[in-house]
Image (spheres, rainbow, N blue to C red):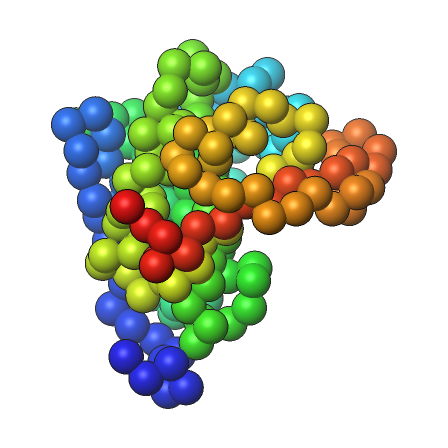
Length: 194
């Protein structure tokens, strides 16, 4: 693939394991997103700026339609993590272009897991699948994972999935309460995968 001419591509829409499905959002997914965020708000609010209680269905539907449009435009690749029957969202993830434009072939993986499933290894299994999928069916050459320095669970997920800690950016971002906090940067290169 010629990276200089690479601005759009036919992004893969879906991958599945026996335990979960990771797929692009589509119109009509708003109700499932509202249900997932409402059920997990207490778990999410500490680290996820966007989480809010009782998000209206219309707002969630608007959000999933924006996710779908951005996916097709290759400007952002937000994905849902679903049960195998795709009736419940059990997390959210994506390949985010925060490390530069698409031709660089770098993406940042973000993730949240439903509160009732957190701490059971699901996040690590989802991240491993994202690394596998990202280095096989996607064009990524580098995948990174940024997390709050105080989010020990997120740090463990990256480490268990085999990502390397590249550094800690001290007092780099504000947390949800506006306090300065550290950011930990993990990454894996395609050449390191497996």
